[in-house]
Length: 210
Length: 210
DNA sequence: CAGTAACATGAGTGCGTACTCGATTTAGAA
DNA sequence: TTCTAAATCGAGTACGCACTCATGTTACTG
Image 1 (cartoon, rainbow over the protein chains, first blue to last red):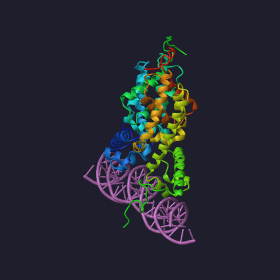
Image 2 (image 1 turned 180 degrees about the vertical axis):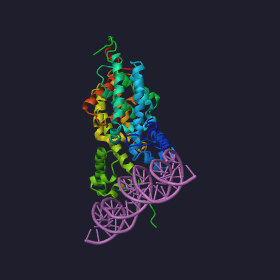
Image 3 (image 1 turned 120 degrees about the vertical axis):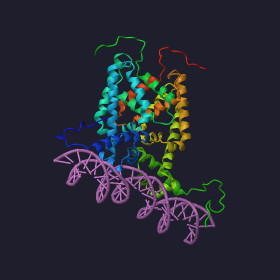
Image 4 (image 1 turned 60 degrees about the vertical axis):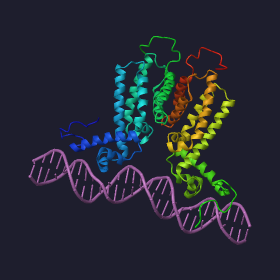
């Protein structure tokens, strides 16, 4: 969901004077088709398959996205932005004691359907292009972490780095054959227990400040 | 008009009458070179690079391993067998309270240097060929798990499935950029805490029976 | 309704890489 | 040593796939 804006004023100062109507429509169709195809087949799916699914010729795909990596990066950016929005909503409205664990669970559950993203997280070329959206998501998850810590649901010494490492690793693990609901529940249970305060019996008032 | 089959009436009943000396030597060199190359460059390294490193022609590689997947499977089998032996030694001689965690740590630490294996764990084609050695390793790790549980170092409800899932996921995670010693220590700390009994304060005698 | 530039099309090109095969060398038996 | 089948060699083939470009089509302007 990144339309550059209404085509109204041709007097834009940037290098994109005015995209034609069919061009905008095709760009959107290609992005949607690519998201589907790469989610199903992984990043090694061919550009031709994307073109076929979008109902356009191969040349049209390359007109909008000069290289395959550009296309992958565009999808990645899209998804990361949507996840960041979701995290933001949880941070402001969700239960701070379960927000992080809930988001963690949902993301892992969707990993299989979003094969591309998981793969791309370990690719340097695309990673660079999507660095900013990734940082935004990381910041949002960091907020969930802090909220959980403030409500004594998460151990104080946990840092965002290992949370992200556990998250991406588990998402990759979810792609493996034999990963079912029960295995996911048990695996996440171990990780979540590890993230909880060890001495949960010592009830202490939530720290209001630092 | 040369019918296929073993030459003449050689008395061997199996399909491999007698490998020549240079053939055996080259096979070993190719395996060693392939292990190196794939460990460094991952499974996408070219067969030519393997041949160059082994000091043989490309044709020789394909004589010993008809397809690239055959070569990858051979390496995989080799490594899995070595790991299984290591696990076996730990089970019979190591400290049962730390054996699993120690093996887990060592394997993750070596993941980056053994890029291939981690990749191959999520490949169906090769997976099938290496199913048996993988089962053996799984059984060995299961033994470490049981030992840890008997000495009250690991929670009773942990099963081999999630231990394997956590292990492979974390190995994959270790391949990512930015993974350093400190991050590894913190990430494993979370997982290990999650695997420990929650009420570790209640010291109870090790159950001798069930 | 032209006029035209932006856009779409899809057969074709280039390249990387797994895999082949006839020529050549070598190990091992007689 | 001599002989031959096994083994090596490496240029060549096949093929998939990212990417191009001459030609045809469509949307906007006046």
